Length: 455
Image (cartoon, rainbow, N blue to C red):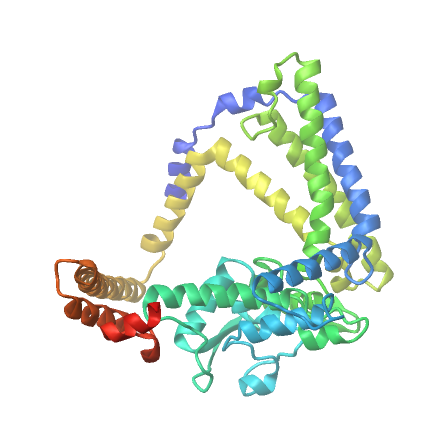
């Protein structure tokens, strides 16, 4: 470990010009703090928590409109006087984009783990509206499985008794079909299920905020939730069940956007009028170090007010950690983390890369037992074999596709070549149509068929 520290200290190269360009004065900091405080107050008053949020009601209505618009684009034709029914639109999407991983209760997964209709969108990885959800959705559709995170474990359920939702005759077509099924099913669940929205005041259980499903892996800690104590994974499940979903993320994003727009606008105004720069140089981009610092300070102020407000409200409910998180602005904290990481990469990019490399080498080569090294070598060998197999399969796929393309190209040339007798051209055209999946009764197989069609 001493060697690791020594290597890192010798490789630290700070971009000094970045520090020199970060010429924030007291007015820049005042602007950033002011904008962050404004956003924090808006968040406290108008966002609050799910079920008691003025902006949340607006984001719910917007989500309903988006789902109905998507359903219309997919062919939804509601009955008269049912054009504004969100339950009808959701029901249409549920029928149009069925999936094999839509289990909703413990009975559906053979009591393998605890799950209810209120949290199955959170525990099912394929229901996540992010790259992780897309990956597991396509994987589950191909493998005929369902993937869940529960109690810190990845659980996969066999769904072989369910018909595969994939369509298409080749691999690429099935991948595209899997993507469409994932997107369509996410849209059908984003505003709750059709059954959950039938009731007059039913909001339904939406889908999780991107990457929030990973909190299911945090099965540690002991937090006070009313009279009970739960680990963090259980706490986050209860948070989701209380409406902390993608729709509420839309409400949480509003004060974040307001704060950033205020800071960027005021920075541009000062950069032009107070510092005498041309408007062309006043675009509020990340190349300006002082602007980046103002954004970090503004978001940090916002998050400080947000955390204070959440703590006060949680104390009112007996130090209930669920109420605390329900009042936290997930989007604001994620944005602050992104800004800090971005600044670290800009200023310490070489150091961060070297640090990761040194730590990786230390873990892989200095901390391993002989048995661990053997297992890693065996794993590496298996990866190499798998890679070679995949390369072979890819080559075979390319050869097959090229062969099919050549055959169809020849058939088309013969069908359109006027120097060849009509009987041969018609026969070749009929064979081509059959190979492309045209129904038998739609194929013209003789000159008589052509004459009757055009007469």
